[in-house]
Length: 306
Length: 257
Ligand SMILES: Nc1ncnc2c1ncn2[C@@H]1O[C@H](COP(=O)(O)OP(=O)(O)O)[C@@H](O)[C@H]1O
Ligand SMILES: [Mg+2]
Image 1: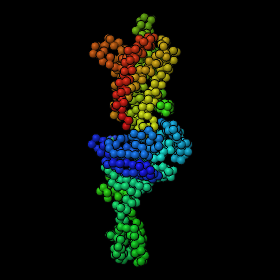
Image 2: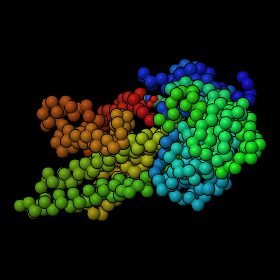
Image 3: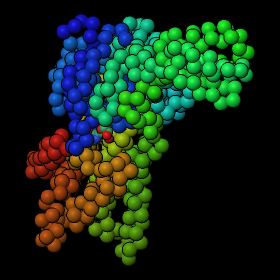
Image 4: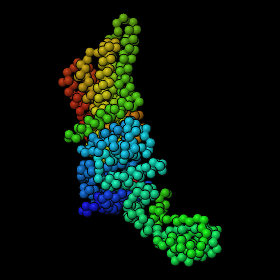
């Protein structure tokens, strides 16, 4: 066993009747990283994560978390991990501080509740009933509950689904904070922007199968190396100049607006060089980089939003 | 073991606090049975006194002395079971059960805490009913209070285990209350509460012998009238058997999510 690997998933399979939710899924999560399992709804993210947490038992395959078997060593493991479940609720009329106090009482060692609530911006809500909290506040409370036992690994399943962009950003900062405290974070999301912003590495899952695993930038480089530079200029013959750039593979022109498509790191520099060499008057300049969404589209032939 | 008891204590206290905050939670489980007891008692004594003789008819007095208190006690137990079925449905649907299961709490502890809450409120409702009865009930209350409370707690505990089976069957929380009522309330007319089981048509009497409520009513009625526990060993055995069977079934079919 590699001590740097906090989670090792080896060829697990889980079916619900005829639905195969996880099929030969393998990946590993390293100590101290934010690892994302990403894919569209129904891809098998929750199933896989709950197998790793010990909440479900895979039909086949092997899982080790902190060197423990999630099903067999469940009690020992539960003390060392923190989980946030997709779409979980608490009792409608439980107060924020009561939830934290109760969760603290469940673990032999727990961190103080007050600083935790303060850190998560819930301190002035400590006497509020769960049902009166906003979506973002509920998720922050679930983060608090996942951190209460000072876990080594934190599991976050679709943490920001249903939140508005502002609440989402606030949560992203909190997840970064969790990693800064030396914890390993394993999360799932169907939001590619979230994965790119948060994750050190991601595993793309589709129809229960892992398609590829790597840092987002590497996945983009590998599967979608093309990038586009958009230049608006009324310089005569600009299109021909751009076509002459070796790293450019295609140039489209619409009036004075040129879309220069190419691959490789030098494309942008080459375009800038050409502009300045021919003293082109430029009214717009922007680069369009592919995202994880494009990677997903390339790998599966489908848009992840579909 | 120690941790389990600590978790049970914390969770039970927490659930009591939460239940008290429910609209109608306390009113429904404490005030309603007491009011039912006193109001129906008043009406019954009124109609008894209106009859031609100055003295109340013996049947009416019997109704007031035993039937009504036992009936209200049974209603307290059944409404505790219905409330449990509803709560379990809501907790399952909201993922609360699942969230608790992802902590060191042992799953049975979660359910046991709810049983304790229901038993505590059952005992409290009964206590209030008897206290109020001493002052305001037309024929007063002179039953062995501690023994009767114990009998009702035993009854509720036994029927709560059926509640877990019902909670496993209900598809969604919205169906919990009506389905539970549909399964539980029809037991009342067969239980011997108002018509002795022996006087029922043979087919119905046979059905009655399979209903846990029949044994509960026999036990409650007997203890209320001052019988010793030993006279009801059969009823107690039946209620324990119901608990064992229902718990065995529930532990197989219970759904956490
Ligand atoms: N408890 C369950 N019973 C039956 N089917 C399930 C269950 N949980 C998930 N599924 C099915 O398994 C597939 C994967 O679901 P899930 O793991 O929740 O995906 P994701 O989290 O990526 O949206 C889906 O087709 C879903 O309908
Ligand atoms: Mg999911």
